Image 1 (spheres, rainbow, N blue to C red):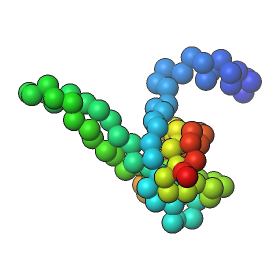
Image 2: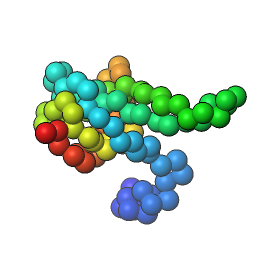
Image 3: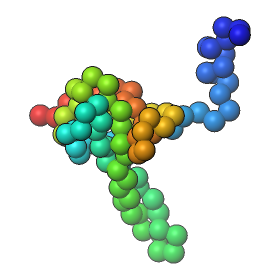
Length: 94
């Protein structure tokens, strides 16, 4: 097996999705719930609508708190609902 990990990551055909959201729950062990808000235009009325999606995120260090703004990345399935992992904490809750 060749050691071409850097070239493989750069030339990845389908890059992993990256989202930014707000932590809404961190009561589970090594798991947090992140609410990601997308602004989309309504097809018929062309009005901007906010769509919120709850994503289950893997938090290895258990250091996320409710209200933190985080950047998350898509990953392989880690459990029944978890398909995302934390890249970085953008802003801590006050």
